[in-house]
Length: 291
Image (cartoon, rainbow, N blue to C red; front, side, top):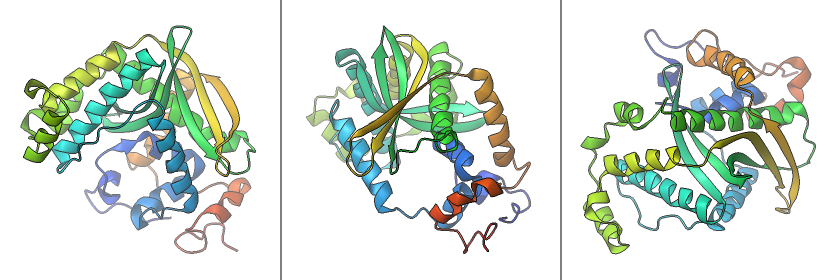
């Protein structure tokens, strides 16, 4: 296994991260060892990943065109995220669907971030939809478990924002929005598309973003995992499940054991070593099941 943290060093510091993503936690249920190695050695983008991102981008513009003003600073990028979140939430009312919504939250005191693929209106309630690509279409429980954990986390995060358990004040402690200043070029670009000066503060736009999430219709306990063929872009299958708060709490407890430094990254068990042949670290940085 990878070595322990240096004295006084947290797992996040060792992985050069400031927050945990919902996808990180989901990937722990595919192979925790692989998730860690991707941060230690850098993620290598594959044709399959590029294909998946292209499918997501195409699905996004079906309902909303992202902001065209290019950010020049971290503050600009944060503003752009909140602005696009508000715009995509508008499509939830107009088109009964929203896509690519970035969400924030916390878990055991750690900052948690994620990007929801899709929200869909069904019977007056908002359903979380996770869109995944697949090569074979063989959707076994071990294959779908990470996707289910990811979608459940998104449902949890949205619920906590809507209930007021997590909101602007929590995120402001982390980012200190009032101290963020937009670049002049970005401000000019916003003015050119009609954004009023009083809405050009990073703090202001994030307050509005949280208000927009809180004012959404009620959340459904139904969650959908939508599988699309990586080869043809055709729909393969849907898995519909119910939000399981208790089950998710157990998954979080297990996952956080790694992030809090209570244990090292765990490789897949022997019965799942078939996954190793799909991993670029197999036989190199990781030789757990190398023979």
